[in-house]
Image (cartoon, rainbow, N blue to C red; front, side, top):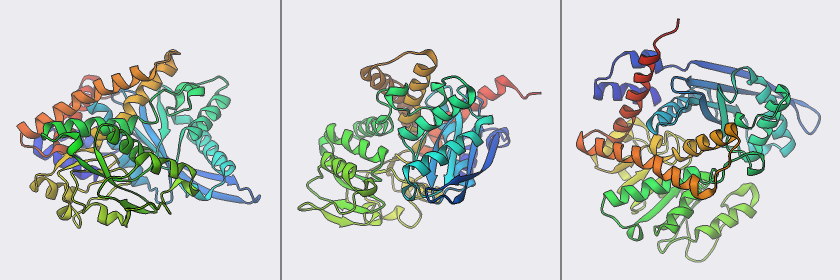
Length: 411
């Protein structure tokens, strides 16, 4: 998908062939073997990887994903999208991503800690505050970033809070970081609705995925006046035409097993599948789960007027064409979910300069930075009659290619 998107924007915008040569493959990919001692005393082997796609614009940046379906091609694509995302929003980072093949829900807290410490020590030669900065992703959180920071600091012999972002506040994390991706989704959704002439209070929203991105986007969109009528996670979906109580659902997840919505039951709520969620007659759909959720099979059934991609790569190239022909507006992932990397940049700046920003400053700066590329992508989409993903990628690629031409090829 990532390579096809890259080739498509090169064809549509007549970009140089050198772009595919320079950025079609990552700069570096490391596969690591991770034996750890389980709680029962037995040794179990896991496999992980770290991919650095591009350092053209600055240190590589990207999350660590723990999931049973992690693959090297997936991580390469995610790292590539991180490069485009940073370039689009003018953050001085390159793209990276990491993954460990495991089910984090089947690991005890101590087993997960040992696994992440082992992974950190294995990728130590290629990471650093000025080389590659990990962050949370699917299956990881602030506690896991604490483990990476501590492991790196102990092995280096000095404290290094700039090695990761998404840390707890007590260890130099940034205020507003946890909600940043969801807040970015909210900001661009509201801006897109304004462009479409739709007031937030007249908009209904369905959100696929109720992890950190989905639940924060749901909460903030509801505060902005939108009606959240459907949400789903891996345990199932929930729909109520009159609107859901998002805060109640968030609290339910906090207290439930595995932090899932499974078993949530109040009056008037209908259980739906993830497939049914995409077919609801809503104004906005926010896919905030995993890749390849909107496909050739279901794109023609979508009734929403606007799709805001909270997840990375949720729409296949075939589905993109269908949505464009049907004139369904799309805010592509490299813009819609860029709030996370933007506030990660703020955290990195605070950690490396030993400064602390308050929440208001973080949120104000996030809004300022994300609005500019949103306007550029929207205008280019509608003025040049380009699909929104092509418009966004062309802006990112032009910036990163121009930087590569200035740096030239070494040696």
